[in-house]
Length: 199
Image (cartoon, rainbow, N blue to C red; front, side, top):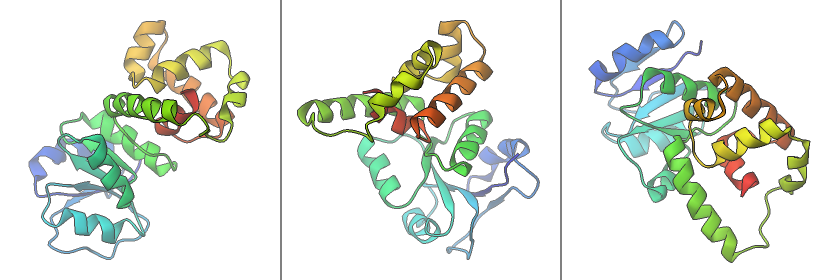
């Protein structure tokens, strides 16, 4: 399990999430940016001065922004400010845990619904600029098994692991394993990069 810090004033919402993380995980209600280093931090963007906190903390920590709903433009602003991901505030505890694991392994965390929307935006942009490529990863797609390719194609459309498992009649654990194998073979770390590869 992973240790994390939640910076928020809405403590009641996040207390039930704490058992999904390692001992030492806690909630902070801070008025100013603390001197954290190398921490995984969930930052509630409803927190006063959250943008300043994000900019200050992101240089030495991995920040996952908590927000109600985001547009692609708002997501872009958060990522440019240094966030390693975004999670909707009402997400279940398992999603917070999955986000923490992904970011701690160097990936970005973006909810599947936003990945789907982002996929459409990127597809439009790339159709107007066909010369852009992503590390020639199309050649690497040949290294994937048929099932890995099938799972990757569905994941790149923004479909959640749970829905992929139901659609393909396999377990969620198998879906995760196929994605892990695909990421390794393609030299990528997250679903956002997968969208670029699979376009």
